[in-house]
Image (cartoon, rainbow, N blue to C red; front, side):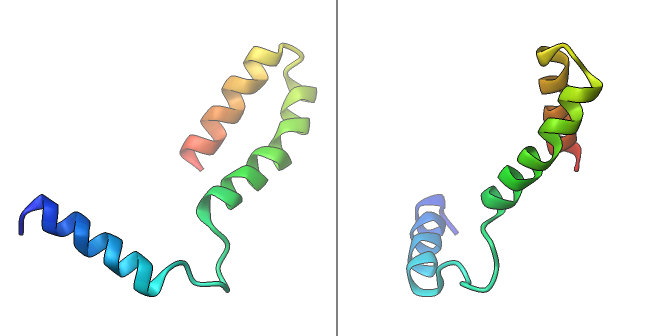
Length: 62
């Protein structure tokens, strides 16, 4: 199947089905994880850059 048709099928399927209302969006979950981990990591790593790097790694590999 050509890429154009795959994209069109994905858009149509998204309009028809959409996101299920009972499940939270993945981006929202990632944001909650970041908010949850930010304070403890800033206490462990006083350098804000190091805390940010650890937060990035935690979100990327979680």
